[in-house]
Length: 185
Image (cartoon, rainbow, N blue to C red; front, side, top):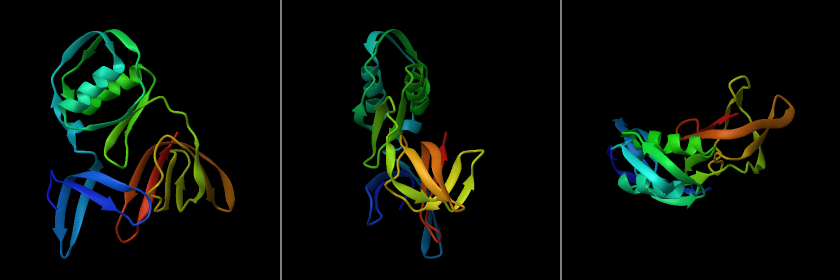
């Protein structure tokens, strides 16, 4: 496994993840790696560009195409009379556009980028919380590979059950102690 490669991660349950290797180091007979969804293209620098009378979906698709990322469902089609895409990392250009339209974006397990307005459906299971920092909205769960951002999470912690919040970010950690870290608002 080398930095820059694309890999598939299959945990035998849940979705198969298409990932990009950002860091890889051999420690004895095991690798320590940092993987991110997609091709790693959103960290690439893109040039500034001005748009007139362009649909947001067109601008999003151009950003993704320029950096070699696949498009999933793109549900922001507002017409923008003028938009200036600033030079810099592609994820910042995407983030600026999506936030201006009160939307959000995320990487799907298959490596595609989803863009749209959140509907916040409830996650289909009640999760067991191992560690909680309610003030920060940060929770550690047993490995839950099917959990994605864009859902409302209900969990059990300290003998109680309740809504933890809207899932904004998810990190799956595989290793001696596999777990899912969740960031909620």
